[in-house]
Image 1 (cartoon, rainbow, N blue to C red):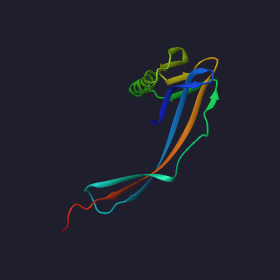
Image 2: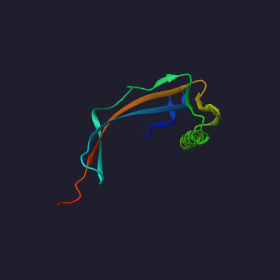
Image 3: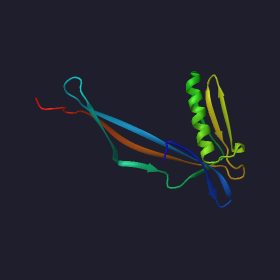
Image 4: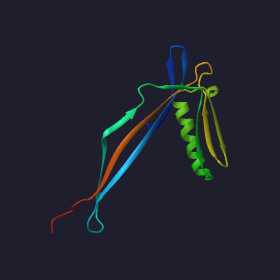
Length: 137
């Protein structure tokens, strides 16, 4: 699942928007000796791994705001939001996307009579950086 998913969600009352956020926590360790040469990066899902809500929470709306004064950064976020909205067929009436000098904001309202469903997923990883032997001298 991507770190942010905005999709259509079927309920007993019809369809609305569903938003999944995946919060990725990456803890690091370093085992390096010597200088230069290739390294290996190992990434492992921790034993407490992935946790998520037991069910989606129904809310009236959800707003994602990215603060940035860099136009390239804002453009990247606008593209990411538009791609996710288009990929899952979210109708234009269910959201408002704004881009101004302060940042980008996406307000998702979903079907007005149903609201929006949301879930937060947490994934904990550990990354280890190690030197790799290249030959025997």
